[in-house]
Amino acid sequence: MSTFSSKITLNNGIEMPILGLGVFDSGESTAPAVQCAIQNGYRLIDTAAFYGNEREVGEGVKSSGVPREEIFVTTKVWNDMQREGRQRESFEKSLRALDMEYVDLYLVHWPIPGKIHETWKVLERLYEEKLVRAIGVSNFLEHHLEELDAQANIAPAVDQFECHPHLIRKELREYCRARGIVPEAWSPLGRGEALTEPLLKKLGEKYGRTPAQIVLRYHVQNGVVPIPKSVHPERICQNKEVFDFALSPEEMADIEKLDCGDMHGDPDHVDW
Image (tube, rainbow, N blue to C red; front, side, top):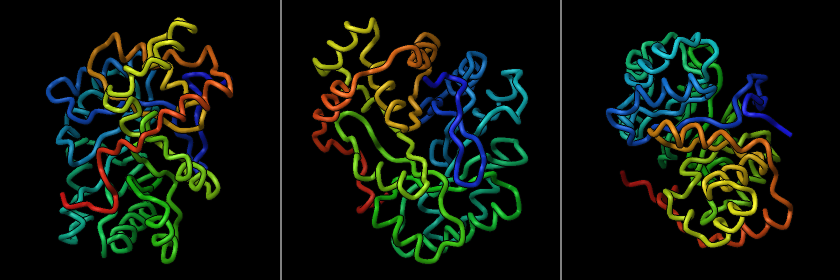
């Protein structure tokens, strides 16, 4: 059974932690949340230019006392910077805000029509210049990945997409794995909405866990890297306690039956 310190090897040989901390909408609590997470063993921190908290993430990493090279930091290029052809500028701004010399994983935040190849070429150059250790995408569906593959010289290492019990994305997960792309889940708890499901409460009672821990165990057991967001130390610590039990195949299948297509962002209609 994997442990919290386990890592998954990306398609370029780089190792990535199998569970991390998300910081979307963490506000002024971002830096202390990042510091708390790292001091409690987290080594994967996920942010984005759009979140407006890259500086605070950098501060949290520094104040943790853990060497930078032990932390896996992800950030992303936002949509407007893609539309305006300012992808390189976006990366440089992110690097300055983080106050780091490199980023571990740099992602295309959303697939912008007509900009997929242009943006990816910029990411490939950043990778070749060793300013990023790995490159990938976010919110790409199968047809977006196929479009990218038609002209890409470097395959994406990760596809980060919305994935939770109300939107399991089974076909996309399988598509990624078949092509050596690691699936990563944003909103892995379904913004809390899925946690009221009776099934998850029942499983939580069986295993002595919270519904959130049951869901995170579901992701990890599926080979999906979850990045739950929290600014509360107690929950940050709870979210990592999912490696000393396992759900049965039947229980995994039951969770997948909760899928109702509840999507908070449509990758085919990106108008923001």
